[in-house]
Image 1 (tube, helix red, strand yellow):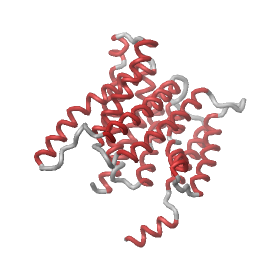
Image 2 (cartoon, rainbow, N blue to C red; image 1 turned 45 degrees about the vertical axis):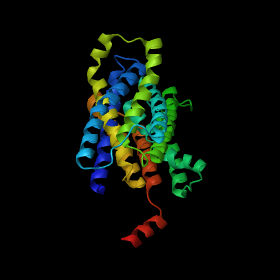
Image 3 (spheres, one colour; image 1 turned 30 degrees about the vertical axis):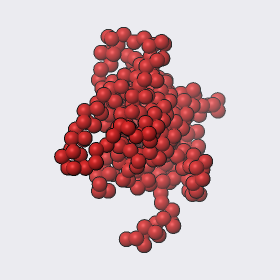
Image 4 (cartoon, helix red, strand yellow; image 1 turned 30 degrees about the horizontal axis):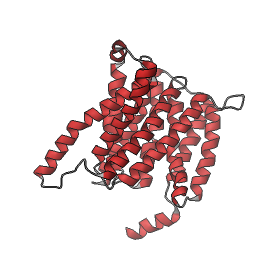
Length: 302
């Protein structure tokens, strides 16, 4: 797969995810967090089943090895991704109940900073610029989130925990995606996430059919595009993309979330909050820029 195609896939992913914050916010007017996530994830899994069948037929016509469901790594990776996706998306839904989509989008983007930090536990070296990026992000989050009483709002803390959960999901994808069929793993993660959310949906929220039908548009956007399309593009593209470029492109979801909140919901951030967003976005970019040694190596290869 060419770099241009891979980067385009990641850019589309960021755009869909950014606008999904608006769909999630609107969806909360009709359904509870667990109900919205259960339905969107199960729709995402269902949408991928015919896609998998079509891809299997194409492999057969091209005499390529057919992917299988009988891989241990496929199910382990899919289940782990589903658990982390469930935790992250549920926390995000609860945060959106009382917070602007732009703010939630930018704090969520901190997962790109958390990934290399969590990599320390896997004995991976973390560059100095990442630590500087963390410090910059803390300042940005203070301007964006901290109230006059020097405390984070509950929704901000939930979004921060959401970012941690997505960090684990990304690390899981990085580990398992080269070994398995990406579309199948994506389907499994949605199925697992949807099944987990289904339990509190039935026991705590018990949504009515009229509520589901009233929120059909945001549900379908989140289920088909955000889940079925964007998360699958992420898994497939991460097999071929350079980590730096992939992270930078995916981090643009925070920018698209602010644009979506402004254009569709009329949400406007204050100058202080916008400056906080700028610092956090700058921190995300800084943390993903290649170091001098890596740049030198790339120049030598070219």
